[in-house]
Amino acid sequence: MRDLRGSRHEYASMELIEELHSRIGVSSRDPHDANYLRGAFMRRYRENRNLKLALDLCIECGACLTVCPAYISTGDINNSPLGRLRLARAIINNEVSAEILSDAYTYYWQCLTCRRCSWVCPMGIDVGDVSRTIRSILYEIGLAPRYVAGVIDNLETTGNFLGLPPDALKSIINNIIDEIRTEKGVEVKVKIDEPAYALLLPSACADYTVAINTFKGYVVLLNRLGIDFTISTRAPDITNYGLFLDERHMKLIAERIINEARRLGVKLVIAGECGHGWRVFKNYIIPRLREYGIEGTHILYLTADAIKEGFDSN
Amino acid sequence: MDPCHYARGGDLVREPRFILSKVANNYSYLNEKPELAICCGGTSGMLAKEMEDLSIKYARLWYERALMKNADYIVVPCAACKLQMDRVLPKLNKAYGRDVTFIGLMDLVYKALIT
Image 1 (cartoon, rainbow over the protein chains, first blue to last red):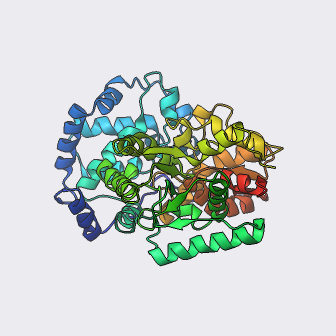
Image 2: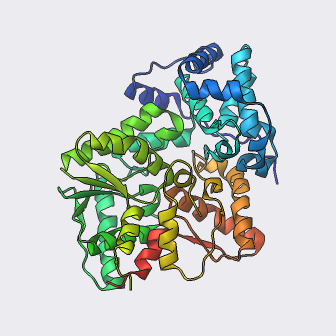
C-alpha cells in the first residue's frame, strides 16, 4: 500500500474562500502569510482557555497514543494527539516556516476530532478542539479543504449537504411516502414547508440517499405517535460542517434552522440520526431555540420513550 | 456502534442501546465502553475523495473488531458513519473476503413496526 502519511485535502479555490469569508466578515489574506498564522495563534492562545491548558499541561505521557485511531492505524507520530500538540508548540515557539504551515494543514485535517484521546488523557486535554482552532486560523489565511468548504457553501446557500433544490427534496419525500404505502400498507402524513407542531431535521447526506430506510423509520414512528410534523425545504438537514472548519460558519448554518423553526411556528425540533449534527444541535441549537420557547430533542429519545411508555412495536 | 459525537459529549448512548435491545435479537456491542467508542473514520471532512485511502486505513480498526464478533450488520445511528460505510465496506469486504453491511437504527425500528 502506498505511503499515506502525507495524505491531505485538496485546497478550496480562493474564489470560494473569499465568498465564505465575506459571509462571516473576515477579510481575505495572503494565503501564505505564515506570520499571520503565528499572531492569530498567539491571540487564540491568550483568549481560548482550552487551547492554553492543552499546550501548557501536556506532559507527553503518550496515553493518547494508545487510543487515537489515526495514530494506531498509521503509526505516524505527526498524525497523533501528541504530535499535533508538538506542532502547535512549534508554531508558538518558532518563526512559522512554509514547512510548518504545510504540516499544519496536513496534520490538523488528518485528525478525526473524535475526542477519544481526551477520555484517556490524565489532564483531560481535548486535542480535537486544538485541531479545530488551528483549522479556523488556517482558513482565515485562505487554506481550507475544497470538500469541506463546498459542503459549507451548499449548507449556507441551500440548507442541505448535497445542494439539492426544493423540487428534488419533495420528490424524494413523496417517494418515501409511496414506498411506505407499498411496504407497510399505511398512508403516512408528511407536511412539507407547512406550519406544524414539530420540525423534523433528517440528515441530508445519508437519509435522502443511501439511508432512505432511516427516513422511513422517522416518518412511520412520528405518524404512529400522532406527532404533527413538517419538513422544511429551506432547512432540511442537520448536517453542520461549520463545526469542522470554523465556528462562525457553524453558527450561520445553525441559525438557518432556528429561523426556519420560528417561521413555521413549531414548538419542537426533532434531530435525525447524525453524530456531529447532534453535537451542534445539543450544544448550540437547543439553547438558542429555548430563547424562543421552542424545544429540541432527538428521534432516538422519542423512540426510547415511546417503547418505555408501553408503545408496542409488534 | 456508538457514534463519537453521541458517546463523547452527546449524552446519547443508553437510548440507542435500549432501542437496539428491543428491535434486534442477536447483537453485541462494538465498544464495551461507549466513551471509548471507535470512530468510523468518516467524520471531520474525511469523506473527501482524496482522503479515502487514509480513511480506509482508519476504518480497519472497527472493521476487524466487527469481524471478530462475526457481525453481519453494523448498526450505525449516524449519517456520516453510513456514508463512510457505504464507500469503505465494499473495499474492505473484498480485501478480507467477507460480507459485512450496515444499517441505521431507525431502519430497524421501521422493520420492527407493524402499523
